[in-house]
Length: 258
Image 1 (cartoon, rainbow, N blue to C red):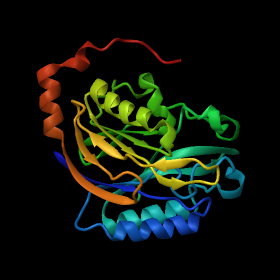
Image 2 (image 1 turned 45 degrees about the vertical axis):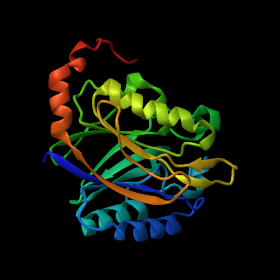
Image 3 (image 1 turned 90 degrees about the horizontal axis):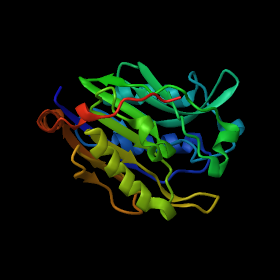
């Protein structure tokens, strides 16, 4: 499948209210016109960026995963976003990629945001994964991972890099710049989905959800400070032609991450 039709949902989040957030996203998802292949939600889309997982952590057998499976089946589209998951006596900020079939791929956020104390309450992930979906190789990452290019480095020849985030307005210039940089250096489509609104910690989020192609050109964007669903189509032939013509990934350095 050379084309992938994607919907990104930039939304305000109800603080630590999983049920209400699921209802809100259900409404937004069912308002998407026509068929899409992939729906991407923000980081911790059922709770906001909370450091109190003991109150709101879910499990892989809980209501949010069941909701994602049901919605993916109904829309015949994959659904992706991160949620708080409790597993093996640890809490994870886990990116879930739920296929229409109900199959789930997941990635545990590696770079925990020490400034907010995320490393004190969540366990860091150790493995980067690549999701195979409709002939596309997709690399899922979460928020603070964006600041660490070595972790995102395209040694797997993936086609699409996805970041989900709760990235505050005060540092939004870094978000804009780094999303574009990741697209250019990895020669891939790069999508970033951020939230809007204000959380109880008085952090303001202004969105700037966007998508870039492998040359760093913006191919989709959202309105600032607005809840918005944006639908767009990515063409894998475009990236393949540019990669083959320029060959920049062939000249990358070789090293290992410890």
